[in-house]
Image (tube, chains in turn blue, orange):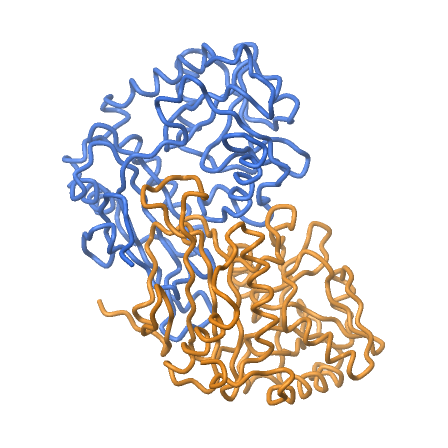
Length: 300
Length: 300
């Protein structure tokens, strides 16, 4: 049985390989305990977007998990750029991963494992395809609670997604496109791969805790500041979110994504909001600005 | 760089292979989203212990995750026995896994993936080595809360272990052997790979919710019933647990494991308790009883 893979390239064990060859042992704790952290940066027109932000978070995450990444920043950039180059992408979704690795004796003590670094580039992917962007997302508010920060630090980007996956199935069952999960007080938090924002009275709000501190979330905040729209980080109740004048999601997989329906309720007039649209345009404008991007060819 | 592997064999894509060849794509959602479930059964003197209990739970888990395992019970048993046979083990730790699999286009919708089944056998492993069993475990009560059942159903055996791994590091930092995690009310729940029991006044108690319903946990309950020791499933506060007359952990990786110190407090007289010792002996006696075990050679 020959498996089909997307186009792509990876870097493992010191070499670049085709994505179809990028495999890890089933004994790696990154698989058997999801004992791993990662980051995803995107490339648009052969330029990385806010690469240093992603690398900063990746280094911080590997440190917090007590397996600091040993690859220096310049080498890391060259590996990531090399994956994109080898795959021949103009636009790409580029992932860097560090797992706890494997113990040669299957010792259960995580300190006995040798951490493993992996990087790969695949085609750029979208939470919502560009042709659907003007329609926006129809979001369910899930009954499932996002894994609490008292259990797993959401700022350490991680693969603990079963709550999010179950949230997606719940959304599909109820006829929605995707879902946002809640906290123990039914405040909305985040969805599978995205942060959320609510817009009302010319102000943005986004959850302050219990969520990944997304680079695209930060970008939306930075862009709002540029156009003098104030941003507050605070809890957002289900009701407050449903009554937003505008709403959007943020993700490396597609940037700023309008939300036009929340749990069956139309947001505003059901079209992409004015502030959302402005931030979308600013977001893509920044993609050829030298302060925000790096040419892959300068990093190889 | 040649990686070192433990001895072992695996079954993937319809064939038996050496454990060193058992690898999954880095694009499998079982890795990138820890979207997977598994079960572990052990073989002792070439006999599986309570295999049907593990298979029942595995089938239930794959159904709950909306990817019911398609391999029939007899074939599944033959695959598991085949892994043990190929590796030539008398005693073994045998894992069956189902992941969400991979989408050939990296589509984010989990319904677009083809689930993947993997099985492997490696040498039998111990939470606490037999030579240390009479000393018992020195357990820390972690400050970390186990992932809540409101987020991820702990009865679906899963790889969401970052809370447990951080609990282990916390235990090591504080000079303990391993840790038990707590719930939001500071009741003790479970540790990395084991359930817990408290023994007082000739009665057993074990947490009723927020934990994996372990097969060895059920075995301890069944064995206690055989010797007329009542068992109650209920919340156990930190204080109640520390004041236990005896305490033990249960795991497929070693069976019944005495706990002789809890968060610095000696349990009972610091030796393996009488009831614990009786259950340990009964546990190993059952390992050649035909009602509790199946010969691997009868399953091939």
